Length: 86
Image 1 (cartoon, one colour):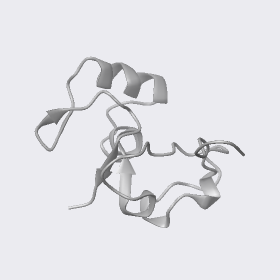
Image 2 (cartoon, rainbow, N blue to C red):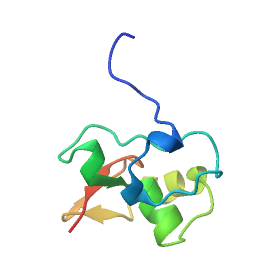
Image 3 (cartoon, rainbow, N blue to C red):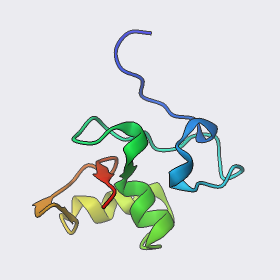
Image 4 (cartoon, helix red, strand yellow):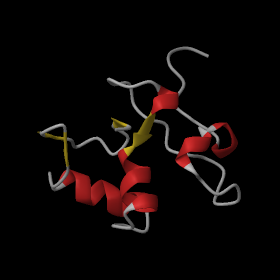
């Protein structure tokens, strides 16, 4: 129990993420950033589940590491970056 929590179960994920219940055990936990856990959406979920740019977490990581994604005018290379709702 030392340090911050690094895991997030799907059933404990915010309902605003609209994850299916049986799609696995874990959900991507947003890294610390400008938005709270309940008021953000990790880039992984945004790119994979909403925009359908990738099928897996590995593909999302490759897209992000190519420095193709900008959030608030800055390139973001963290796949779990917490993007706030607009």
